[in-house]
Length: 99
Image (cartoon, rainbow, N blue to C red; front, side, top):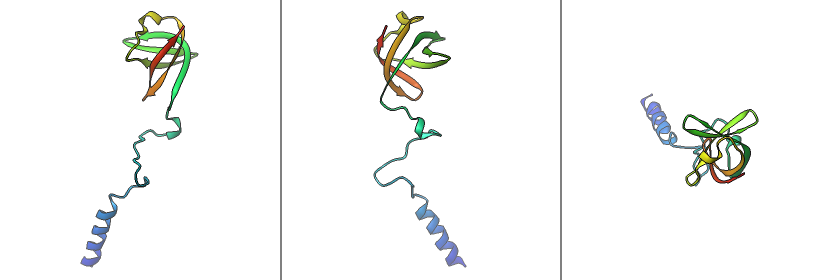
C-alpha cells in the first residue's frame, strides 16, 4: 500500500509540470476568448472626446480608449478624425491622426 501511494505521489509530482502547450511555445493568452485578440494596425473614424484624463474616440454608440507616445490629442477634442495604431490591451496606441 505504501509503495502504491509513493508511486502515485511521484507520478503527480512528475506530471504536475506538464503543459498542454506544444514544446517551444508558451501559452500567455489570459483572455477568455482568444478570437478577440487584436493584432496589426487598426483604423477608426470618430470624434475625439476627453473623459477625465483619458482620451477616447467615439464611434457611433461606443467609445475606445486611445493613447500615444508621440501625439497630443488636445487639439483634436470635439473633432471627427481618423486614427490608426495598434492595440495594447484595450487601449489603441495611435501613431497617425488624419482630419
